[in-house]
Image 1: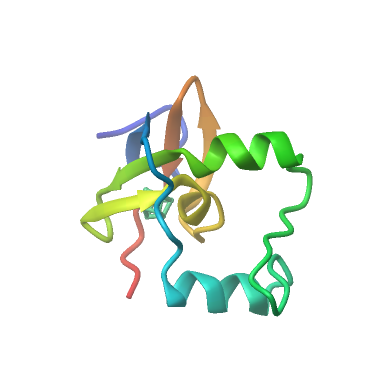
Image 2: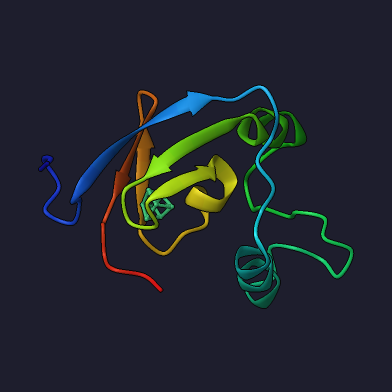
Length: 97
Ligand code: SF4
């Protein structure tokens, strides 16, 4: 799948979920290392209001790289995340381990 942006490999629709998907340990470590989460596990995303954060927790993507459903917050902070427009994530699609 291609998009206008050459960096984008996948366009992934964001979907709503009834229960928020927990961040995995890898994502937590990553967030802590870049200062977006404190030691207590509280998220501190720059430019994201508590209201937005609440909404983001109830969103998810079927990630084509990790080949599983991931919470949108994990996607938002992923190094492959390019942008989000009209309910779709523009994902760079680089292989990640
Ligand atoms: S940005 Fe990351 S988490 Fe989101 S769809 Fe792409 S690889 Fe998956």
